[in-house]
Length: 469
Image 1 (cartoon, one colour):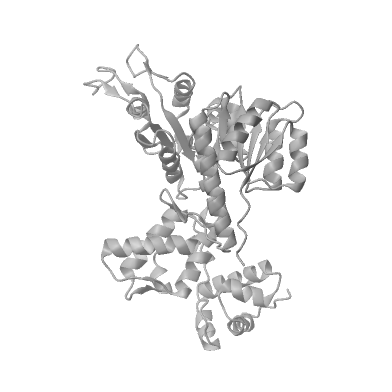
Image 2: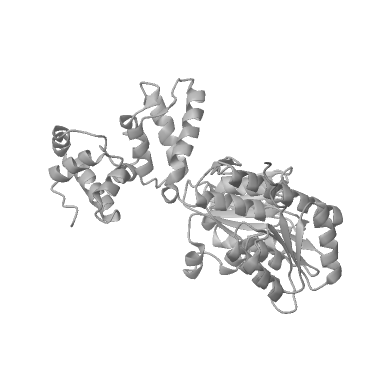
């Protein structure tokens, strides 16, 4: 008995124009789709009750319910459904809003026939691939590494998906996140995945430039503009013309220059210091900051109009402690890189060492983790990095949050630790904190600490900790 083939992918087409439905039906059928036509938004919502389409093509302007509302309903009903938004009156605002809500693409009418055909074929292939993965029950992330970033957890996978969706469309992006979390990598990924990937990507750290030279660095200067200006010099905006300019730590930009930067963003015109002429530039601007620019704006330290101009799209990079599930994968990558650079035989970490890293605070985020691994690789005396190799590498706050001595030990070992008030206090406080997060469940707390239950009971007895309190 042969296994029946899987049903073909389905596409929900929502448009009040019968000719548009007919056109998409013809193209989609040729691509292997089963088509579910809908003349309005109400009909589409009714169909969603009994159907689960793989793809949906939705007109932005429907006679009863707006296309954005239909998009929201589809995403709520089935987050895996790939949605295409269509419009005869496309605007940047509507495109950005659609992509933020999860639309895969934004098509303008009349359609570019080859693009529509290729898009549907691509979606068909994506659907087939996803079904094969589901049928085989493979729970594997699509990409552990993406444009130099590593992340298998949901927060990073969501960030990668947003980068893919936004890169072809956005001109101005604000990237927020703590120091060392990878904001510049996000900016480079947006550039690499966008239409200007073959053009220049210029980066400048706004906190590392002398304030008196800032204007010259960004906008250039004319010969004789000031002492030492012996020749005409183009600024970074001119150098990045046609490409992307990344302004790291934009919150450090002096107030006097914020107004000039705003003007360039609004008009696309750059005027060199000491020059009376203006130069037209076409530059995508990506800015990053670890500061809360809204609060800075309210306090008068950052121009509110510049903040709103930059904040067309806000991408937040999660802190490393918010995605601890990625630490083993990042660690493995950094160990391989360090071993290759140092020409050593290091192959990985001991379980206890890995537990230390997973539990650490990581105020310096991925950058701190990379540096800690590199220092530990230099100090390691065998092919495995051990917990003690991190002693001098971890910062004080990172070490304080880590389970300092959580390997299985005897009561005598705990007594030895107790001779050092600082270490025992850290471990006792950490165990109490984990017990509280585990709701007093000792078995769960032991798993969180990386201990067997017997070792945890020894510590509870040695430190006079009562789990029920």
